[in-house]
Each structure stands twice: as C-alpha cells, then as structure tokens.
Length: 154
Ligand code: SF4
Image (cartoon, rainbow, N blue to C red):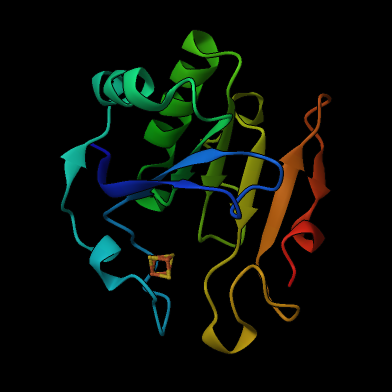
C-alpha cells in the first residue's frame, strides 16, 4: 500500500509544469546522506484512487502535472496510480521521481511524461547540480526517453 507523508505544489521539479508533488514514504533506497530520512519510514496517509480524487477536487484545476516523489518499494502501485491519472485526468501530465539507477520493470512508460532516475549521492549534489548523477527524462510520444536534466541545472 502506497503512503505519502505530505504534498506540495512545486514549480522546479518538472520544467514548464506546475506539479502536485506527492512525497511517498517507505523508501527502501537508504542513500548515504539521505536528505529526507522520514521518507524511509512506513508512515503517512494511504495514497489510492480515493486520495487522488480528494486532491484533484482541490488542486486539479491549478496544476498541470502530478508527480510521485519516491515509491521505489512499490513501483507497480505507482504505475497503477499513474495509469489512473492517465485514464481519469488525461489533461494532466504525470511524473515519477525514482531513486533507482535503472527503470523498474513494473513501470509502463505510456503512463508517464517524466521519469527521474538515480540515487542521491551527496558529493554529486541534487538534480540541479552540474555534477549530479541523477537524470530527468522526458517520455516522448514514441515512448523513447529524452534527457532533459540540463533544464534543471543551476
Ligand atoms: S531515495 Fe531519497 S528518501 Fe530514499 S534514501 Fe535516497 S535520498 Fe533518502
């Protein structure tokens, strides 16, 4: 069961999008120097279709994208939630921030517009750092991936 700690309306995580960023808990990655250790715990409210509906009723007209921040331990459920958004809110984009090096096999790219890959490595810096190891990928219409990390570099 996917749970989330909180959410924010953010502008920087996905270029050109106003994103509802859902901070998913239960992160299994254990990156040394983790910047959000509370997200490693299995805490927070259940994130399911009903929870998405509540959030869409409040923020659906103010956002252009829903971004799942984490959830590597439950990638198939993240994929299902993104599919739900695709079906019920086709005007909204979807994104996933994964801390894995490689795409989880449970992810169906047709459910996503953006995927972030890569663990947090303290000395390489965050996604906005010129030395970051992480990559923000845009899913193109033919389901190939375009690296748009440069759009976030400060
Ligand atoms: S992916 Fe993020 S939350 Fe998870 S351990 Fe790494 S830095 Fe912490």
